[in-house]
Image (cartoon, rainbow, N blue to C red; front, side, top):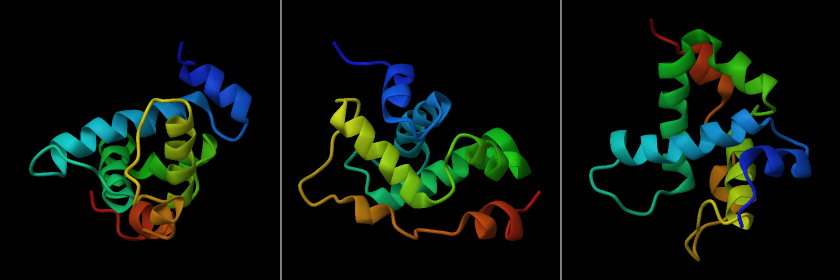
Length: 117
């Protein structure tokens, strides 16, 4: 039986369960809103989808909300994805790596400096 997000978060200790749920929801959001047809989603594309979802949900507070959950960089999205892969909530292609999530964008830039009302 798969562990739930609360169990995964407690065991791992780095992220709030809400952060894990957000990334999981972000995968569906990305497939529906970002991609043309359902297919494998790259780390970079998932980060773009998570950016759009965060802005849609929280607007200018997106960075604050995610920071409170332990998410401060796009690498943190990747850490959560690979945590979920280990717990069978997501899967990865053989060509995927955690490094795909490195420096996709700066949170300060996309959630503050370039934020448009």
